[in-house]
Every structure is written in C-alpha cells, then in structure tokens.
Image 1 (tube, rainbow, N blue to C red):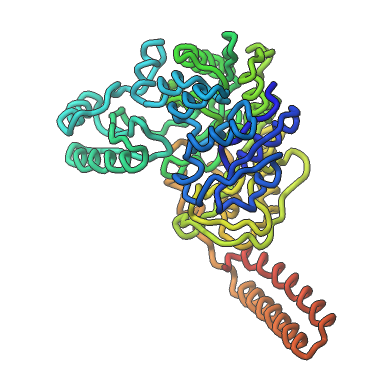
Image 2: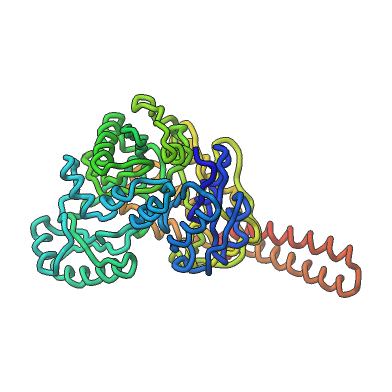
Length: 512
C-alpha cells in the first residue's frame, strides 16, 4: 500500500478519499484553489497545497502543476476523484510518465472508452448490444440525414466526447435536423473542445441502468451489480438507487457479464461503470463506459458492503480482488439524493451565498457525504452539488420512507437547495411505484417544483410570527445601545432562535 497520495479534487469526493486513506494508514495531500482555502477537505488532509485562483482552468485542471506538487510532497500516487482530470487520458499518461501511480484505469483504456464512438466500436467488436446508430462522427448534414433515414425518426444527436447531456439533441423530423446538428456541434465544442457528433436511434421511455465493475491487475474483472439512474433532468442524474426495481436476478447476471466483457475488451483496471439503456421489453443497449469513480458509488457500497474507494487504492497498489462473482448479491435497498445549491422552484437557478446554518440528519441507515459546513461560501466557480444524502433499508419502500425522514431532518440555511424537491419526489406516487424512465422527471417536473400556497390562516400566522421575531431582535439592538449588554445578548439569541424556527415553518408552508 502507498504511504502517501495526492487527491486532485475538491469537496465531498476529496473528503471521501481522505477518509479512505486514513482508514488504510495512508497520508493524504489535498490541493485547493483560493476559493477553497477554508474548505473542509483542506483541513482534514494531512497536508494541503494552494494551486491557484478559483477558476478550475487556473487550478484544478492544471495537471502538470498537480503532478509537480505530488512529487514535491512525496506522494506516490494521485487519486483524481470524479470530474476535473479524472477522465483525461493525457493526465493519466503524464502521471505514469512522472513515475507516479494514477488511481484509475490505464491511459490506454481511458482513450479507448473516452470517445463514445470508439466505445461503441469496441462494444460491437466484443458482441455487446448497442443502440442502432453510427460508429463514426458525422461529416456533415447530408450524412446526418442519411443516418436518420436509415434508423428512423426520432433520432438522438450526441457529442462523441461528451457527457452530462452536453451536445445532445432529440430530433423528431428532418426539417429540424440541420439546425439541431449545428447546435449540438457548438455545444460540444464549447464543453469538450471537440465538435464531433454522432447519431443514434432514439428509444422512447427507457430506463438508465448502469453496472459497476472492479478489475484488478491480475485479470479478475467483477460486476458489482446495477444502479437505477433514470431520475434525470436534462440528462443530469438527480437521484440514484441500487438495485433497480426493473432488473431480475437473471438480467442482473446477463448485464453484469456484458459489462465485464466490455471492460476486458478495453484492458480495463480499477473501478469503472458501464451505462446501459433498458427498454420496456427488457432489452438492454450499451451506451458508454465511465472510466472513473461515479458520484453515485455509495448506493453500490451500501448494498454490497464493498468500499469502492478502498479497493481503488488497493488495486492501484497491486492487490488482488478477493471476491468472486457468486459472493456479490445485493442486500437491501439504497437511495441517494444529490443535494445541490439550486433554486428548484425557479427553474433550478444556481444559488450562491454563505451557509449560515446546517443541521445534518442521522439515525439508522443514514449516510451524509458532504463537503460543506456552517460558514462555507458557495459560489459559481464549481458544480452546484453540495453533498449526497444516502440511506439504506431492507426494502425499497422502507428506504423511501427513511429518505423522507432524513430529508425532513436536513436543514441548510443561507442558500437555496434541492432538499424540498427531493422531499416531493419521495412523496410522488409514480416514483414510489417505480414506474419511471429517463423521460419521466421532465414530465413530472412541474408538480415536483411548484410550491402550493398555504391556507390564508397559516400564512397570516407565519407572517405575524416572523414580524414578532424581527421586532424582538430590533428591541435587543436598542437595548444594546442603552448599554445593557448582557440582557440584549440574551434577547438577541432568543429572537434569532425564534426567527430561525419560524423561518423553518415558513418554508414548510411554502413561504420564502
């Protein structure tokens, strides 16, 4: 095992890796931008190094600088987390060339799976079913029209180097194809520096089901089962669960074997995820492989009992996987909600500011993977995800109830968050029944984000209570001016506590 590693990331995933290192007796080196100087991951690491200004292009994406810091501080390996440099083939290669270990797959595997078109080609070569579509980027609008006629409308335009819904367009008719292709190319170029786009047949109403794999350096490749990731807004996952209500034990085995075949074909080592579409008839199609740790890895950890970050480090240090496929059976049910700094009632607009107060849920089966605390400054430099709330229970029904309870306990003051959206999601009858697809949330979004006005009597009571708390606070300030410091401090503390309580009630009644 390594004696020291550098973590080339921030926020909750940096903390997650730091904790795994501590349990393994490995020293950790954190890197941080000016914006993250007081972040929890900086404080929790054994060492921390400032690498530049807040923009990621001037800090977290400076691969050469990060490698230099790792060598200077005696780190033997670099864990990239997810996002930033985690799927950059050149970075994995540069880490290796510098005599360090990249905690992830070989650069060659990242290159093979980094382009969706090359991944499709590899999948087809290994007998893996893919959504009908092109295996090469479209040359022009004429090539797009020919492909769309072959597969039949609607079709899906996708960025070859893409992810997260960037450079993706659904096209329902030939008249809209050329303008959609131009828009997809522009978006892909802006997001990934590559305007290559390909076309797939658009499948109506599928689920997004992914298979987690682990592969060691000694030839063992294992599937750890599936995750259901169909609750998506604009192709961004909002909630994940494991296992999937739509996957039978037979289908789990079949999809797992398919994912293993893809990984072997790519020469894959370490943790990775194969993503599939699962249609209503139970047919599945390979989409792509994520050559890194996924945001949603905790749900797999909770149903398998396998610490994925620990095994990332063990595999990277040369250890063999001690598990066999027959040992890996999902037990119970896990659900993860992504808690983001977004105003879900107002079109998911980003919310910035200072976290004034935070109260975390606890109790049996509740896990919080977060990178925030009271006093954290939330800006626009990075992804809006603040944390992940994860629960485990014996059944899906109990897991939903436990998540609902945990969300009720969660309080974050100072910025708007997705907490209330997730509460409504837990209460939604269609979600509770499991009758979902990747298009489901877009249809249900209006009912999940609208805030019903409270009864007039409740509204009046809440307004009166808030006004009374504000009056008491002002009275405390007046008393301070008269010099009665002890009494004013007591009154102010009391009024702030009352104000906080009434603000919570106001929020529950739909008032902002």
